[in-house]
Length: 136
Image 1 (cartoon, rainbow, N blue to C red):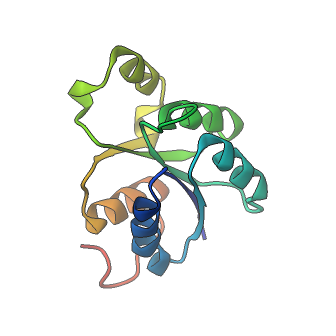
Image 2 (image 1 turned 30 degrees about the horizontal axis):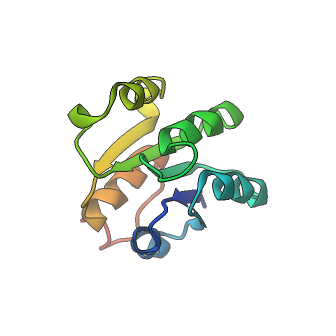
């Protein structure tokens, strides 16, 4: 069983992600800010396998900055970044930060995304078997 941390300031997005991944049997933690994300990390008994983070959080560090800090603590962490706009529209700082992430450990999903896209990204990064009939 994997532990997944969802970092997004929008409760509706966190709920959508939770409902998409709950049937797969993961332990799911939620955070609305970078500060909450680090609190949840301390609470995660089994460690953390996957971070799903909104790139542009309204206050504090970006989702990319949080991912970089978590990677320092957990080098084998896998990351899904979700963003509201295409990569080619990222500012120079965001693009530079993102380039620091290991490309084989990161998937970027643009909003809106389908639940099946999220499940495939999770499966591709953490490699756990999916429940029959759910992959789509």
